[in-house]
Amino acid sequence: MKTFKGIASAKDMRVAIVGSCFNGPIADALVSGAAQTFLELGGAEDRLTIVRVPGAFEIPCTLKKLLTSGIEYHAIVACGVLIKGETTHYDHIADQVSARISELSVEYNLPITFSIITAPCVDSAWQRAGIKGSHLGVSGMRTALEMADLFKKL
Image (cartoon, rainbow, N blue to C red; front, side):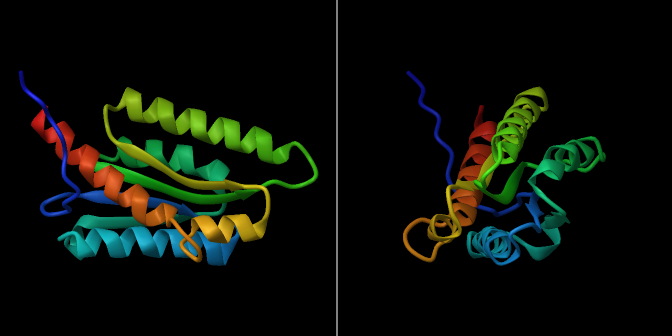
């Protein structure tokens, strides 16, 4: 019996981060955490592409642009922040963005991690950005690299 498992190493990996700018300081923390993790895990700066988009809704079309650019990425990390408000806008955006990211990952057979915070309030969002507890940018990059390594082995 063979068992396959990836390791979180950025050595020789080409990775992109697509990060939204809306909810700026929290989104910035996610992107910088993901980028720093890439470098700490042996990645080279010239093999990391960071693309900033206005909001989470723009992430899927930007992912598709990267996927069809002719550059071979081993993984992509999608970073953003959605905070629930008093209208249903949050629900529509969160549902559509998560569905499209998943579809693109399967369609292009490429690990695309969902490091988009969906939170009821700003305080909860900060907690997911590493202020207290887990850091979704860091864990998203680690997962992306682990999956990219696994895909190389399969």
